[in-house]
Amino acid sequence: MITYKDIRFAINQQLKKTNIEITSRDVTEGFNRPSFFVQLDNNVRSADENQVHKSMTVQIYYFPTDRYEYSIEVLDMQETLEGLFDLKLAVKDRFFNVDEILMDVVDGVLSCSFDLEFYDGRKFTYNVDGTETPFEPMEELDFEKVEE
Image 1 (cartoon, rainbow, N blue to C red):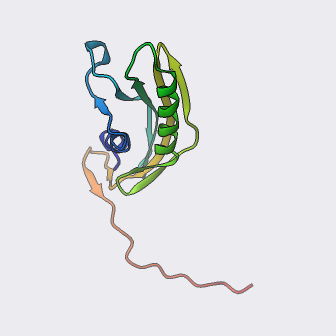
Image 2 (cartoon, rainbow, N blue to C red):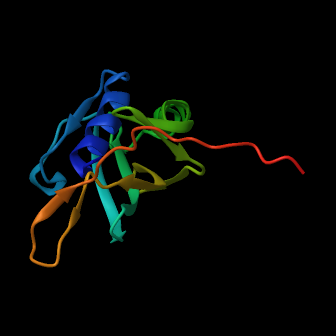
């Protein structure tokens, strides 16, 4: 199954291509500039006995080099982020759709956000007594084409 850590790792791998620091500390404690801060918001999880559905909003904050003169740098970074997260995000052996990227600048900080949504199959099912039973893979499927 895909975990939140797997998603965060995949996002950070893309951001590392910029050679800009990714801070994991709380941004109120101080940080170097330029740098990124990443968080997953609005996490929603629902499930049934066969699969798990997850959705979330990815928030990437970019703190430019200069707190007061940043307009050109932020425009360049906006283009870079749009390119890094264009259409798909590779997470482990899967590719998640990135349909819409939203950008906003507030107090000199570029905020980039996009939504991810996916289903993940379960490798086991829960029994009434709380134990787990692994799903058995199908061995062979026979089917015949029916003539009309």
